[in-house]
Structure formats: C-alpha cells, structure tokens
Amino acid sequence: MDAAFTEEQHEIRRTLRELLLKRCGPDEVKAAVRTPPGYDTQLWQQLAGRLGLPGLALPTAYGGVGCGPTELALACEETGRVVLPSPLVATAALAAPLLLALGSERQRTTLLPALAAGELTATLAVPGGQLATALALTGPNDGDWAGGGRAGGIQARRVPAEGAATPSWNGGQPAGGWRLYGEAGQVLNGHTADVLVVAAHTGGFARSRTLLFLVRAADAGAARPGPESGVPGLLRTRQTALDETRPQARLELRDVPAELLGEGDGDAAAVARALAATGVVAAAALAAEAVGAADTALARTVAHVQQRVQFGRPIGSFQAVQHRLADLYVALQAARSAAYYAAWSAGGGRSAPEGPGAAEPGVGALALAQALEALRAVAAEAVQLHGGIGFTWEHEAHLYFKRAACDELLLGPVHRLRARAAEEAGLFPDGAGEPGGAPLAGRAPEVVEV
Image 1: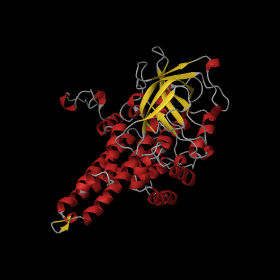
Image 2: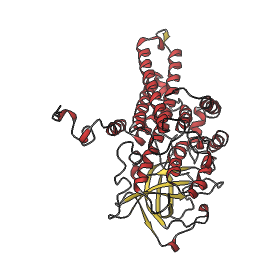
Image 3: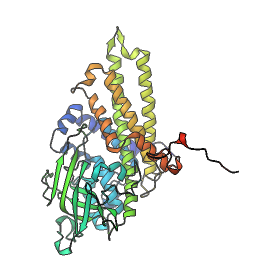
Image 4: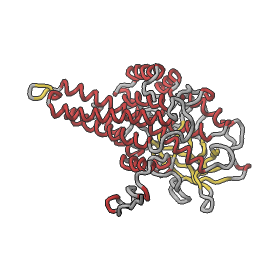
C-alpha cells in the first residue's frame, strides 16, 4: 500500500482550498445559511463548473472526472475546514453512487452528467430518520427500516399504466406506474434537490421489500424549486436544525408519481447491498469533512492561546493548556488516518472504485466514529479555551460545535457506529455486546476443545 497522495490529488486540495479561503469565510457562511436554499448557489456553480466537485467520483463515461472516493474525501476535508454549506454530500456521496450502482442505462445517461456538471442536485430520502440504518452504518439494513408496511414510513404502490404520468425528463418513457405515499424527515438538502432518490416499502405483508424510486422535482436549468415543487402531491419544508450549515427538510408525498430506480421489478437484496456500499463512501466523506473542521478549529484555538494573555503571559505557555491541545492533536491525527483509510478502502484499495461491496467490513462506520468523536472533543475545547468570546454568536467556534453535534445525531451516535463495526468484524458472536444482546461480563466462558 502506497499511502502518499498523487500530484493530482494534491492539486485538488490546493485549488479548492485557495478558492474557499477567498469565497467562504465565517461571515459568508452565516449569510449563506440564511438564504432560502441554505447555501451560496453561485459558489456551488463555480465549484461544480470549475472544479467538477460533484462528479469527482463518477466515471468519465457519465460526465464525471473519473476519480474515486479518495478524491471525494479530500474535497470534503477542504469543505469541512470552512464548514461549507452545500449539496455536495447529498449529491456526490449519497444519491450519485446509488444511481451509478442501480440505475438503468437510460437513467444514468440522463441524470449523472447533469449531476456531475452541477446542473442538477440530488439527495437520498429515507423515512423515519433512519438514514444511518439504511446505509448499514449503525445496524443491518435488511429489516423494515423503510416503514415495514406501517404508518410513518413511505409506501409505494403500482397504478395502471394508463394512469401513470409521463414526466418530460425521462425521455418520454413510461414513469413505471408507481405512486409514493408517506413522509420523510431530516433529508439533507431535501427542500432544494432537483432529484429525489426515495426509499419506500412495497409488496404489502406477503412480499414485503424496500426499493428505491426516483422523483424529479425540477428540470436542468430551471429555477431552484421551493416548497411547492410543481410535482403533484409533493410538499417540501425546510426544517429548523441546530446546524444551519447542514440544511435538512421534511418531505410529504401524497400519491407522488415516481419511477423505479433500475430495471424490472426491483431487487431488494441488490438495493440493500448498494445502500451499504454507499454508506462506506458517505462515511468516508463525512469523516474527512469532520477531520477538516476539527483541523481548522484546532488551528484557530492554538493561534488564540498564543495571543491571549493571562497572569502576564500567553495562556498557551501553561503546561495544562499544552497537554490539552496535544491530546486533541493526537486524536485528530488518528481520525485523519482512519478517514483516509476508509476512503482508500471504499475505492477497493485503489484511487478508482471497484464497485459496490469492495470496502472492508465496518471500516466506514469505525472511521466516522473516530472522526466525529475527534471533532466533538476539539470543538468543545475550542469553545472553552476561547473563553467568553467562544460562547458568542459573533465568533465562529459555535459553527464547529454545532456541526459536531448534528452530524452525530444524523449518522450516529458514536457508540452505535463502533458497535456495528465490531459486529461486522465478528468481535461479538451470538449478539454479545450489541444493543439488547448479552453483556460480555455476564456470559459463561466458552470451552474450547483441543
């Protein structure tokens, strides 16, 4: 294994860092989150058109750059440094891998080039706040996480072909004869995404299964949609979140026309495998993003303690402060190594992806847990070591603290991520150490015959 980055990867980092330092300071971030989309649309178009950010991990055959999860993780690390509000994670780390893995050739050629060019944005909608479960990060995704036929999820039903609408975006092909009914909350960038990849339950009790469906909310080049998206029965509302730099929305679907992602009648097992593989890519990207945020928060804290004077000397000269910062630095470097390894593993051990299921079991969940824990510790110490100003709205320390708290709520908590990684690695047989399983201390020792 060669752990050194290539010159192309270094160039991606340098170019993106220079652009974000000019365009995305703390004041610009606070101004962007107050806009209806929740991010700077002009900056996003520049990142997509000039740097090809949403298409980094997509093949060149579909308009992408032809790189892999490693390059996407490096880009997310740079966006995390400035706590950039953008649809990058939702589009490139959640929706695009699913379209690439499960979509038909027509769906790929129609949607992926537009996503790679920034003409469209996309996201994954999972009901019940079960995003981490759907991505197999906190538990197996072979259960009834999409609703299980009960209220509170999203249900999909077939309708006669003559009753199915024919959207203009799919080349005049039939819409698949599907209607979606239900709601989903905590959908990343769900209020502005042009393409929704919706997880829904179908088949009733006898043939219960979870499949993915496409809902198109806007055409390429059209104005960004609002709550009234123009799609019959679809209502999208931006939710109030602790971390405003990570916009989320609630989707209400009332017999919304949709198209099955893929061909045929759908394969629930293939959907579960694709979601798990996407979970590794998303975990690596979010882990790298958390590492970038922690790195900047730590650097600004170090600079502050070198300038703040107490008892006639900078507080950074006190040994207690130095030890606290040294511990944070060690945790940060461990999280960075884990995030890089997860991205490398998600690409099949190479810079280009080998396909779904190529990563080692549990590596994504473990890296994400390490990164989220490091960011939480660094952000909390940053607030404390900045003193009274660290608690104010005017200072940027709260941006990193809120990012740490909300990311763990979205894809955690950390202890469940680690439990899932241990489960996949086979450390806890027969359910020991799992939530609801028998504790290790209370189990009788196993007798091994030689």
